[in-house]
Length: 295
Image (tube, rainbow, N blue to C red; front, top):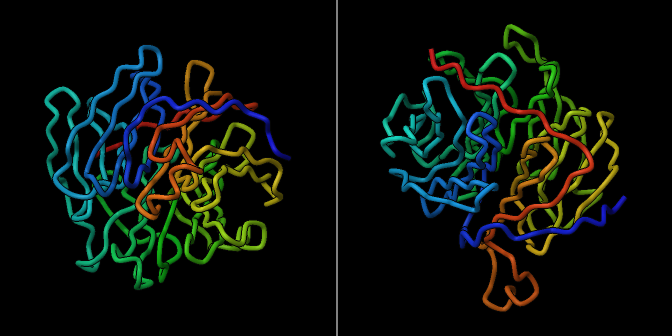
């Protein structure tokens, strides 16, 4: 069950809350964010070159979109980012979101829609819920009344969508239709029963329809079968694992984001790679994300 992988530190980003790691197949680069420091990072694994842009607020995710842009989720709503000019432009707010909420994690589906979640920035109220952005329209879709949302994650064929309730230590699954309709979410994995001290963070779905999740406070990533059975874990040299992406030329290089915001000074000796972008070779390939359809 434990995969003996050689984990490499790729970039010492010093992330306070590294998140949203994603493989951009069109550019052959990795994007990830540091939510609390308002950074959008770009990393080229072929050369090791990297850069960062400062967002105009807390940034939860960035997804490649049509027209050479990225669509980003910030505290105050959706923004576009132009890698050429390094400029953010606000696209729209999320209707009905409480002022104390922010956006946290997201993915695209095979039709170019964006599925994303919100949460209470103070991590106190269960005010988070999930939404879908569909060519300029935002509507609620999926569970609500959640403390910290993560995901969603959509299967490669687009028939299933996974929603993570991080504070509730559970992952849910629902059926997804081509028209964007979603069934009621049902239990997929009770991660609290498997990893009592850890919290499920960002999920992805690989090419075999298995679900990977980062384990915050758990020092590992975990892989689950489509039936919700734990089939593998990979230990990490950082405690607070937020999300993983599968990329590279064969989509079998894992990129992993980490966080330090809940660590005490004495914790760093035990977790020397905390805050860095990590990597390992995966036994299975991922699925390249579809570009966001903006309109």
